[in-house]
Image 1 (cartoon, each protein chain N blue to C red):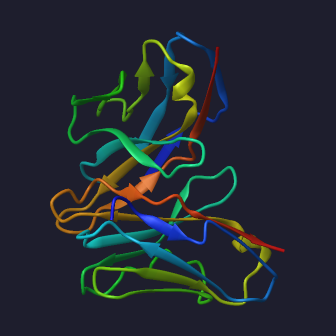
Image 2 (spheres, each protein chain N blue to C red; image 1 turned 90 degrees about the horizontal axis):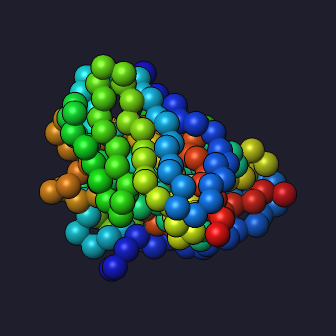
Length: 114
Length: 114
């Protein structure tokens, strides 16, 4: 079956530090890959996505590249801010037609300190 | 509506009691998902509704769990004879026909079974 493995947190960084959150996956077929973010007290929201190999998703300074050869989708940001403190979930979806079955990782908590 | 809403935001109940959780998806979204998020764990798929099609109930952990949805509107998740292991955050998400891969999440209902 499908699975997503991401690094356990919490990850604590100083403001303006470089961020990497690793994510690897196992899936049949050709999944789409996602990063969702959950800010304190809020619901999950889509941060970025990539739908095929070598695609790069980007949003709010975050980037992730779909690497089929290493089955990875690592999240990066060059300079984190305190406002980036949140829980980050890596996810994949499979399924053609109307049903998109999404598998999530356990989430990585990021804490950015001033 | 502007986003997915869920109620109640928090629920404390006694073991053995029944609880009902509600989800209002984004207007016009045909697909609706329920997930469970236990402390320190990833999102666990429970059930999926797509329009008037038969729901995918493959993720429901036991026959104590059931869910209903009226057309493409409100959904309720019912847990009968609650157990302590049911304590978790229950998340609802919806997606549109045009962008099936992107799920929009509600803030969740935090359930505590004493």
